Image (tube, rainbow, N blue to C red; front, side, top):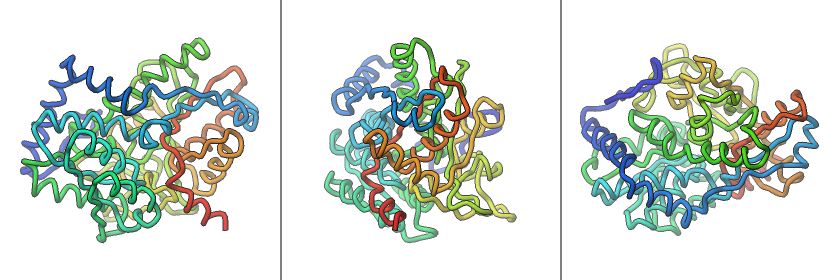
Length: 386
C-alpha cells in the first residue's frame, strides 16, 4: 500500500491504524473512478465552495515590483476563506462513502478547522477539532467560527501547543476511535494515502491555473509561487504543472531570522520521520524534532509533505524561506496596492513573488496562489505594527 516519492513517503504507523489507512486508500481509489462521486464533488465545489476561483492581474503590485506581471490565484475567495475547503469536501464525501459518522481534524491557523466544521455541518457529520492553545489565542476568530458551525474545539496543552501537537492529539484520538471516525488530515503530510489523496483534491488549483492562464494571456505562466507549511496549497498548485516547463517556487517560513530554523523544513531540515511519513524534518543534533517559530500559525510546522521533498531533491521545484518581517511587508503591499487582505501564510509567497518579478523581464508572467484571506490575522498584524 505505501506510496513513495523517491525515498520519501511511506506509512510509519501503529498496527491499529493500518486497516483504517488501507480502507481509506481503497475508498479513495474507488471514488476516483466513480463518475457519481466526481460529479458530486464538482457540484458541491461549485455550489457550496464557489469554484472556480478567479485569476486576478495585480496591476499595482506589478508596478511596485517593476518587472514581470504578477497574477493571483484567488483561493481566498473559496467558501470559508481558504484553499482548505477543497480537501475538506473531498475527504468529507469519502467519510460518508465509508459509512463513518464522526470527523476529527487538526488545525494551526484555524482555516482547516473551519473548512472541516463547514463540511461536517453540510454532510451531517459530527466534527471535533484539535488546536494548540497558542494557536487558539492568536487565531481566536477562527475558533469562534468553528464553534458557531457546530464543531467541538479541543485545546491542546502539550508540547509547544501549536500545529505539531494538535496533529499528535488528533492521531491519538483516531487510534482510539478508528472504527467510527475519519481523521480529516489537513495537509499533504502524514502516512500514505494522505499525501497523494490531499494532492488529488487540491489539484483543482493547478488545473484551473492551466485553463485560466491560457485564457488570460495565451499560455502557461513562467513561474508559479505558493507558500509551504505542510504543503497542501503548494502541491495543489504544482502537481498539475509538474510535466510542463513552468518553474515551481515554494516559500517556507523563515521566522524572525538569524540562526533559528523558523519553520523551513526544506531549506534548513534533513530527512527523518514525522507523523507517519519520511520527509524533511527540522531536527536537533540528537534527531529530536526541533522547535519552530513563525508569525503565521499555518506554516508553524517542523515537517513537510514527502512529494515536496522529492520535488526539492530532483530539482523540479525550488524552495526558499521568507522572514516574518518580509511577510508583513508583503501583507501591507497587497492591502494598499490591491485592496486585498491576504493571510500571513501566502504573504510569504507574495514577498518572494515580488522579489522574483523585480529581476525578470516584463514579458514574463508569475502566478501566486493566494491560499487564504487575512481576517484571521488582523490582531497579529496590528500587534506587530506597534
